[in-house]
Image 1 (cartoon, one colour):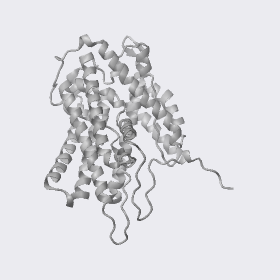
Image 2 (cartoon, one colour):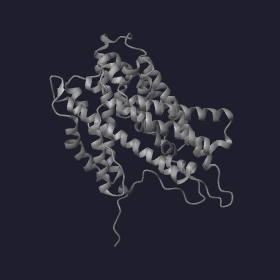
Image 3 (cartoon, one colour):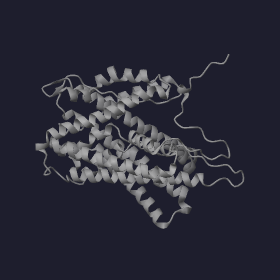
Image 4 (cartoon, one colour):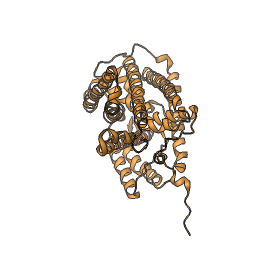
Length: 404
């Protein structure tokens, strides 16, 4: 007798491609559901580093940096959609087969063959690993801050990462069912909202200390740092095609995406400004470290986050988690790390590759001004990645701001 299969344990992240000759069927998600999915895929713990980024760049420069990052990311997401629409609109005249683009890697394969697919998916994997490291650093440092003696932590963050967080993550890695992981993901999203709400509450309790005389623009050297943090905060770029394909009416996706980006950008700017104006030069690279150790702050600091990666072997899963934990234990500063990830990996995924794919895959159909915009995005993205990486790795920020 054949063994029964639990459908929930085999639930795919993406539906399989349609049969040969068939076109893609519409998804089932409404505009409201898609809006929620976009917000969940973009907003992460990186937002808690925004006040520190505003401290480094200045509240006005930081606001402009977040706005530019939001507009640029939105524009490049549309480039990916245009590439897919253009490719799927060109059927093979001899066989009548339709082209099906399901993922970011599929576009990489169309642009550069197998090498393009591997490169694109490798960058996505490494960027997600970078996000996972940032989560562990965040949780480890917050838990460590609960045990202090004369302003110094008694227990280093690495102890919490290896003895508490790593065992939990290893246990979660055995779960193969996406539906089983969903409660952990929902809990993490709820904690993100709770954390932001409590931080904003604490900010407004210090309203009388607010001063717009705090640095509005702290020098051009701080802009790449803040830009890297801002780009990191707009994570979830690789989910663009899946989110658009999930909609019942894909024609509305651009407007839903625009609404999501406007809302998220305004929230990011407000959160960064209020956090910086409340604490000024005392703003920590994780804003929750500025909170007093009362019950509400402790609730935020001990919150947990779960994430999962589907790998072919359980041993490989555990090895990946161990490597992530080791890297997280070696990260000296949350803000510098997320700026580095945003300046390098996220910049390549969010700006450089979309502009390159658009030029290669849609080149014959592009007008001169469209080519010019693509080249501008490509060159600026490369320049930002190079200088942002140098800036994040240098000690100039620490020396200039005398960070303890």
